[in-house]
Length: 360
Ligand SMILES: Cc1cc2nc3c(=O)[nH]c(=O)nc-3n(C[C@H](O)[C@H](O)[C@H](O)COP(=O)(O)OP(=O)(O)OC[C@H]3O[C@@H](n4cnc5c(N)ncnc54)[C@H](O)[C@@H]3O)c2cc1C
Image: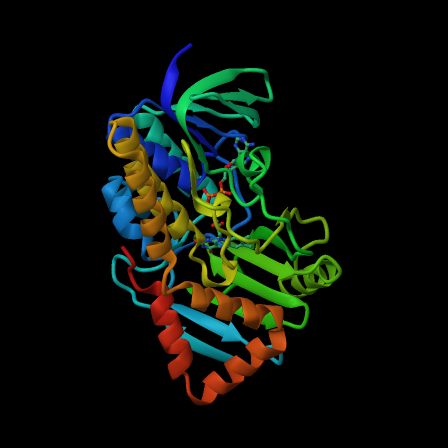
């Protein structure tokens, strides 16, 4: 049986980018993905401008721009009572866009395949054993061997669970997401709306569809859904996707021959729409570390550098995430923030600029 240099569990943005960068470095790379692509995923579908440099390095930026998308020109914060503040977004070529994850994730995975990565779809990983090399088993009874393993399998990471690394989850919130017909005159704005029961994110993903996300707690989520059905005139039978948790403690990202990237390593509050950037960025950083390990360079040094660079990527940004979480966990606080910003929008402008400014 062939031994891969690296096996990556999960073909989302973290897994695909890591796989593509590993293949570019000449590593024999395997991706095991649970779903058959293209597939949708619970997400606000907004691509933070920081993603562009990583996409350029994957030679994908133009192909992403060629997919159906919306160029977002402003963000509108709406308080519980309906008061709002609109902040303009930069509108350069490298601006914030929104596009369906089915299209974006499929493009990334196809790029990895094009670069020589072996990709197995509908291959849910169910068991792992480490004996100098990794033996990885899927639900259909196939087994694969690899020298390094990457957990890129999202916030409910099976790899972390199987290695007893998954933090205990507190009682958590839940998100619902749907694509619905784009309301007339919605424009090219992202809406972040505080509601008594949680919050809602809305963004047009093309000329005809709106991405609608709702975040609440298990007892309140059905009220949020009823609000959305009334507000957007959606039938009660409209299909919604769902996911939980919205927050959890990070999983340490580097172990012997095992690395975690993207949501599997650290889940960030969706409100600021940066998760895809962290997924792509950590995928590239992990590929750099694995390349050094496989080439026989100092393993400890490569892992330390990966840990340092990962921490650096989040540094100076987690406080924004904490602030966003505080605002959304207490929607009245968030609403107060929006009220205050109506009289002095400087704070929201600074925060928004920080979120949409290029990071790599
Ligand atoms: C409500 C909400 C809104 C959001 N909005 C935004 C936004 O607008 N912009 C933004 O940048 N981020 C947003 N995010 C965050 C973003 O969705 C994630 O950060 C991003 O998807 C992480 O990418 P990933 O590759 O780490 O994980 P994922 O995208 O979750 O990919 C993991 C992959 O692993 C596969 N997998 C899982 N288990 C297994 C297994 N056992 N075997 C094989 N494969 C497996 C899954 O099928 C999946 O394809 C949002 C999140 C939520 C919850």
